[in-house]
Length: 263
Image 1: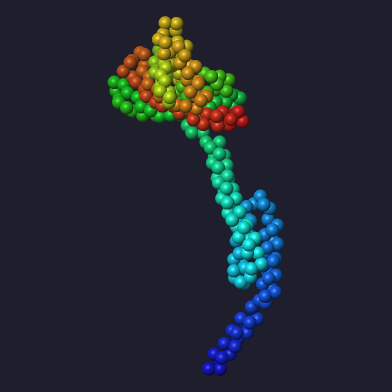
Image 2: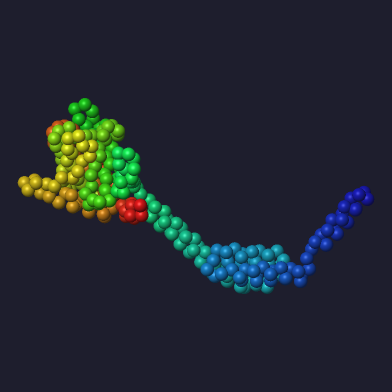
């Protein structure tokens, strides 16, 4: 029994010795208030946290020194902190958007020794399908390139089965394409490839070609610059049964161009 009485007395002593006087409580609240007042108004969320701490401390000590001020400040900084967080999130999304490239990528040309030539390019990669007498709707890969010295003259590499690069097999071969923009406008393009070459260039239409081909190159460049998209439907002029379908998406072109100019 004496043991329990001793513990009870000790507990009471600890409680009494640890309790703070009214003066100490008031001093602690005032110190916290002065500390919170030093927080710049440009940091609304820190202010909100600070005044919330004052309110909690005053509630704990049953004091009422700054209750009106605290209430007013919490209301003020709740609104400002919410606005601040929304602005931060908007800025985060803006910066994130500026770094997006979509289907674009950047690179540098190298010579036969693997050394940089000083020329750079932007590449837009897409996938589609092709059909001929031997296959139907097989996977197709298309790379559209914009070289630093000829940004208004796109050229293409086309891969059947995603990895088999098409090469010219006549003195000259041509793909005839119809293109539909994301806004629904249609125009035509001629993609030409020379014997032994591994890329297609956009060819100028002849004087007798249909009207849809006349402004094809210009209209494609407009789609690129305006960050729209284009659906391609092409066939091989030598073997019309060889058909090619793919879409190119030009969104984030401005981002790619900015990063390209930084290379």
